[in-house]
Image 1 (cartoon, rainbow, N blue to C red):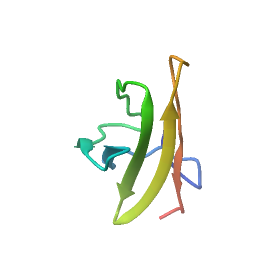
Image 2: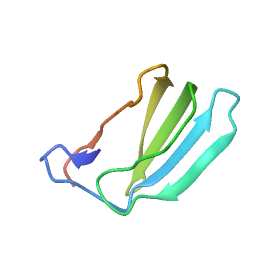
Image 3: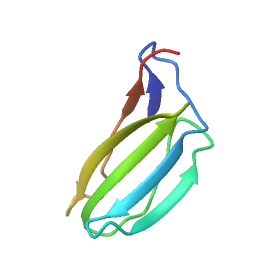
Length: 76
């Protein structure tokens, strides 16, 4: 989920997902405040960029069928 500190949802976020080897698997722009990706088990880095400000998160996809992470930027 992509939101501002104010709680407002944002879209047009540049999303990049890389695997443990550094290979870029996804690079796209979100059309809304949510982004879904079907990824196999493994370790990934997700970078989300809004107005030139990038937030990075490390995630691990394991046996759970769904993983989530939130990205929150300071209010513009």
